[in-house]
Length: 243
Image 1 (tube, rainbow, N blue to C red):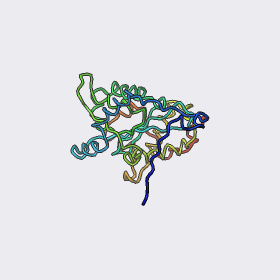
Image 2 (cartoon, rainbow, N blue to C red):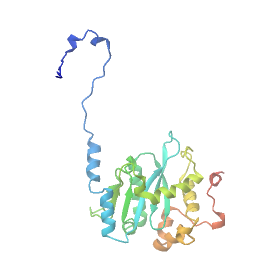
Image 3 (cartoon, rainbow, N blue to C red):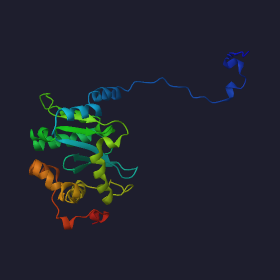
Image 4 (cartoon, one colour):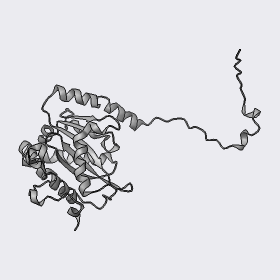
């Protein structure tokens, strides 16, 4: 026969209790900003993205991500990739700052006017803090929803595979661990001009620049500062930025 003994003791019954340091558990507080952000992402999950793109075919889809250099960097590169053309461009941002990303997208909207919504129809980013407010761009000045933003599943890079694959080209020029704080927007434009002028077999030996400009015309590439480089002059090595 097994007997279960239930013992109970209070601090007064334990002579050595006072000798040990203990940390008191603080009551959990509710982060209002985090709660609001979760609510805004509720109808913008990756499953909704798949459902939306399946229902409405042939939409322009863009994937968003950020590239970091060293752990101490204050800056990062916001990358935006058109999934159909593999065309990628980017902007220098304050690392982890959502307001900076919103500022960039609003600047593009001002340059492109209503054409902005025709181009950026569907947009997908990860759950990084820099993308917390990105859904605000869905609405025009009258509060009408003109495009859609969605978020990937946490820690699932394959949800935006086109973007991730294109980052390999960036790493040819900016290896991991190299600081990005010294970069200018002109440097970033130069990097992506060379990357988008590289001939791709998957595009039937065309460049992403050719495919992209055929689809969207010159206004967009002019607005984002990307130019065409002759294939024989393309450099995908760190020496591209050596002055």
